[in-house]
Length: 90
Image (cartoon, rainbow, N blue to C red; front, top):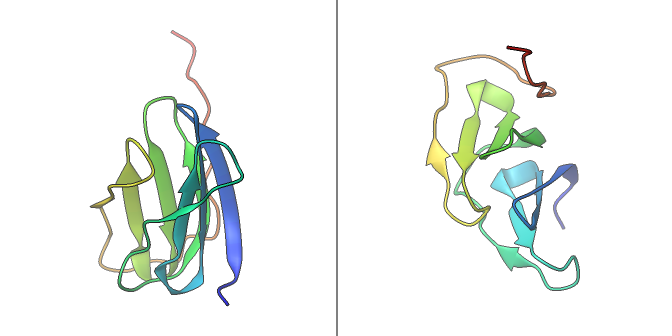
């Protein structure tokens, strides 16, 4: 079993992340699909109004528009324990 560490909701989808690259997503919170990546451990995830952003150990940063397909935006180093989002006033 994988330890799950963060959950976010956006665009009609729940996404949960955790250890060992674990990513699962659901549109109804009852049936879950696996979108795990090969390596890395996630600590947190946020939905920024247009995409999910998941962060973790070793500079791990992944983004997704839908919770299923992920793009690697990682840094060479760093330890991300949490992430937040706030809208900037114009």
